[in-house]
Image (tube, rainbow, N blue to C red; front, side, top):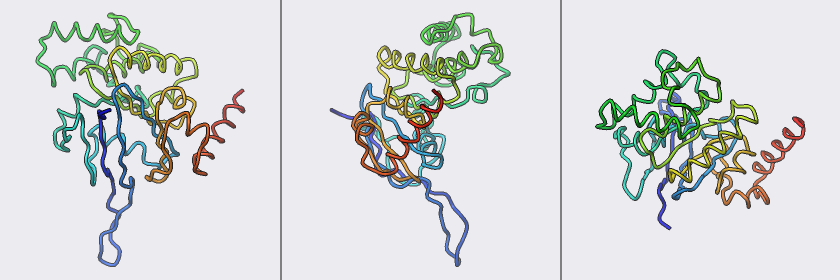
Length: 261
């Protein structure tokens, strides 16, 4: 099977000043390689500082990589070609309250990527917006609302709608469901799984919520301080973790679930 996305020796480091007249760096992401296949969900898990968000931002084009290559359908994604990246790989952020401009109506928010990346006229853009709103479980009328006029769960659906606007191949979710209560989280998970089928999407899921990871993902990669410590099929990693760090993450999650019950 040919991978949709190939990441080869991707790395990220930040300048950290000088030591004995030599420039030193903080390594946020060790060289990492992986593939993502069509209609697959690949999850990255790890504690804060593990490198998940850094990786997500690099893949989405929001941050430059220090080294390595990213290929989509066998073609190299250039670091400077943001328009290409914007169409093919979209991102859903953790907090829609901060990622959605409060001064714009929802219709205006969703229209922006269409204006800058398509040749659709005004009428076509409005039809696209209405179709996407209905696809994520909202109403056509919601395009006239401001973000503060709808619930938190509905705002997250707007964020999902915005990620769908350019018919992407890959959607990256960076803790996008962590701010929702269990009921709303379940609804959004089911929505994302349904969209994956109907829109032929592949997901990259960045999350510390192992219950969601276990439910949604096909494969999982465990990161610790920017380095891969374990990877494999999700069912196998959860059933028989090989690394002490992975076992600790799973045990801590189970304790949290038991405490909440």
